Image (cartoon, rainbow, N blue to C red; front, side):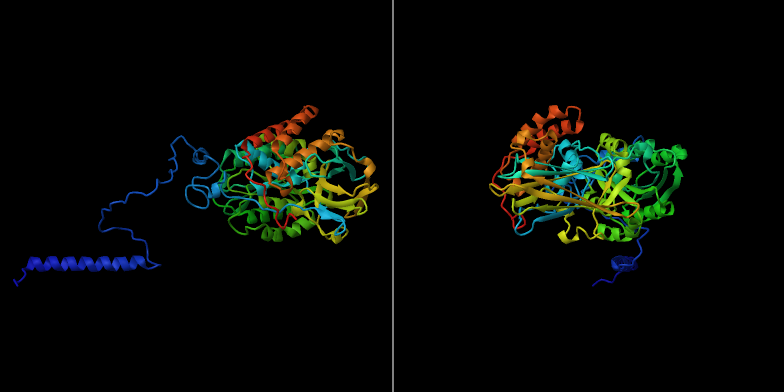
Length: 561
């Protein structure tokens, strides 16, 4: 072997030294605590492999004339974000909206009176389920089955019950052969609350708690929140006060409570809201309640108004944990209105529970028209509670009634023996609000007399006094035919059937949406000045075009039996 000259030896030592350094750098880079390299000593040419699937579309690069909100609106196209929340480029299970959360509470069965002749539930004046369905249909999709709650469809409409002159509530009962149920009667229970005039409304101490996280960066989210709150502020008067809390990754107090004399400052604060970060709803609510508690005045309306998409991903994220933190304030008398905005990345479960357990209500705002209904037309009812812990118990007469089924209220069930337990929570009802419940009832042949007694029990929100009223309905009051029933009765029947069809209820498995469409079209002239009914006709027609032809009837589940 030839001896290496000095240049050859130098070259080999250089190569060996380079390999040692490279190995050392590789080992260091693989250590979990290794610092990120700030300088590369060499570069490598990598040849990319051909992709097996087309890459997802990249987010558009912002131009100098495009602000953040416009960029987000351009990224968000068909209801999803620039990347679906669960990863990939497609929404899971072929759903129309990404990361929407609803809960299935089942469907009430028929109950034989020989087994249980009492039916007990907490009242519910929420309407969010109906407006969520409307948003789905408007965008060309049938609503998620689990999003449909029959009672919220029924309670979206005004049936014209007279307000009581002196009592807190009036009870209205009627019945007729069911248009859609098989071999049964439909019994309607209407409960109307007393009305308080605008001039007699209590002063309102309101705390706006506003979700300003990144997911709210859309026209139908934070921008609609701003427009909605402006409508509310415009309705307030001398003596009312407003404080504002916002939350993103952290919560913060934006404005201490101020009187309506500072209206322009309040509006400017709302208009200046911008989105960023993740969603720490628990901290936002905690700060909101603390601020409301600081400004609390007995004898006034003390209420939080939460505006959010309901998707909490920082701090406490479950309704149960959040409710533990705010329970002391709810018990003190600070009510909560949960107002939902947006669709993709939306949590109906959290918002509904917060509204129900917060002694308030839950509404969903998808248009400026709906904002007007909530914050202008129904403002006094939205703000001022006339009764809380409102519960209903229906005592069916086993000598006349064979079986019954409550349409909806599955998640508002109350144990029969808790009806007169005044520690048991019920619903809260605002000024002039009404509650409607529908039962399908099967009667014994050739039996006459009392069908049922309806009891309503409630607490005065200020004095904590308990009141209970009742009313009977007999077979003599039952209409002979469905066509003889009032228009309001027919409308309630139609809205309940719409919900039962949309949620694929076992009890509507043999019904066709064509029959429902015929009914609502026939009813429309009687409600020609009611935009809600006109809108209902359009929704049913839209649902008909989206409903696939039935392949086979759904099987009866154990829960349905």
